[in-house]
Image (tube, rainbow, N blue to C red; front, side):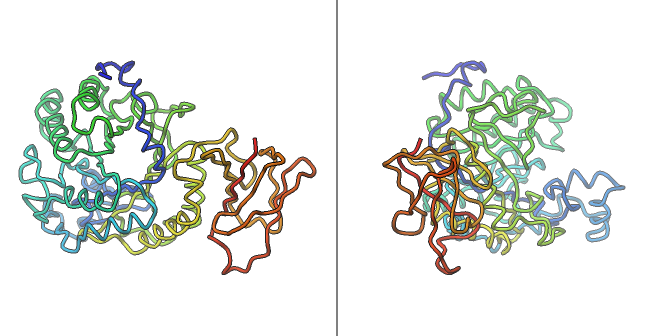
Length: 427
């Protein structure tokens, strides 16, 4: 099908099925801001350059004290060397975490690119800093590990002279040629655009670009593009809609039945923030419960990690990812390829469905009995606990389906944090 550069036509494109099946992806914010790696608690450390402009703010005070008032943001290039970056190690970690796709910041708001962009001469990771094509290195390693690979791209740049003085020239001569070039080179499966909010889609020429993406680009059949294409676009246009730390952009609400994705960090920042403490990070239990709730409601989770400037993923982030991965190793059948059931959940339980089965995901260990009121059992109903062999006994009593659980010692539990019951023959 050929798509016209109109929202009616572009919005008729089905979101590729792989994305709805995947459920869980990794977001990566990595760049020059990873050198200072600092922001006030609760704020995004990747906004460091922008925050420096406020001479009364915490970021400038930290910068002046740590680096000196004469130290420019551009001078952080010398500290961004990625000397410990091992893309295969990253890809292996993401695979073990149970992720199915990855989106790396190809370019954030500072304009610094993680590939050799001819449109950003001497302001990219090949010309300066690491002298490596970081986007290529990770893309190749991720694909070798079986992951869908894509990237984040910031439409605007804080300090590009054309952006501030001649938006049309910036879009025509810089943004669109650069965006097309990186897509043609790396053929991403995911395009996460951002920083659309200062101008409407017409100013960004977004409909024209998306028509090219869906009709002519080398990844036209596989790619999924989000909803950040103009100040009016969030939760209105795009292959899928996005939320960020639970916030829906534009004061809108998510459309029922429309694919969506929550993106957030394990902590409160996307870029690595040395100012965060362990209390600022979600626990493994919180991550499992969040993933379960999002998937039950029809969403995906794009969980961010913020690597250090030398190319390491902080150990606390690794630990959290691996804990989530261990849960998915046992219970992934209720997540991957699943869809929302007719009822999202009931007290302490969320539901998904796949291949005719219903999965009841209890957010805590139920004890000797799990009572469910939503599923309606039949004479052919069977119940199993994922990670354990054999069927469980059940009965109907007092308006509920009551599942009897075996007595299990802690080391006999199939997983932690949430327990999944597979129900067949229920309505």
